[in-house]
Length: 259
Image 1: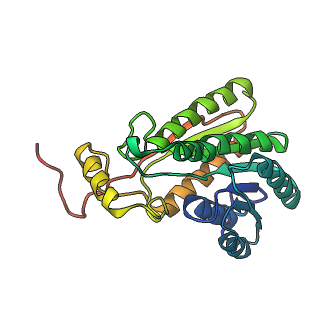
Image 2: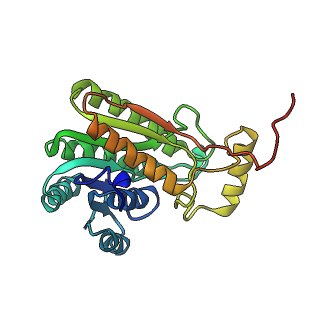
């Protein structure tokens, strides 16, 4: 590890939702940059392998269980020897037409995306160091709902309001809300009905909601870790809201339209 990439050296970080996707990549990136990392999620077989790979600590956690959150955060802090940063990336994205979205689906989305994030913040607050940072991954589509993901969109919008309340009541907290745009190599489409997905894709294309390219998972993770390390190193500034969108690169040698 070269000095220029050791900007997280000594940082004690808890990544919640790290069994796959963005959370997994964040944990890997942070460890490569010198952080000591604890990871938490439901799929322990994936977590244990990740912890072994990065020299960290693994904790089984269902973020719908508030009692478990309190216990696991305390255990992670003990293992890390303190807490400088917590990154929440757990996400439930139920795909269904709004008229087919039943009560249990609404409740599940809100329990994970909204209350899960809130409860992790609540459990982490007493342990965060003086310059500690909390980063919550949200969606860059809040306020611009896509067809087929009403429960996800509404839960993320509610999360934004909760984060506003956190900032109002705890202005001393370095709390970063990141709206993550379409990203490659996540498991967001795991288990989705393919016939429904085909219909939804047509809707997204028609409304200009399907980008030509998606952001690379590694780039998104590195950006999140950089936001944390920058906030930790510059404690008089809070980067309250960041939006990540795919950068659409033109084909090499292709000149822009003359117009």
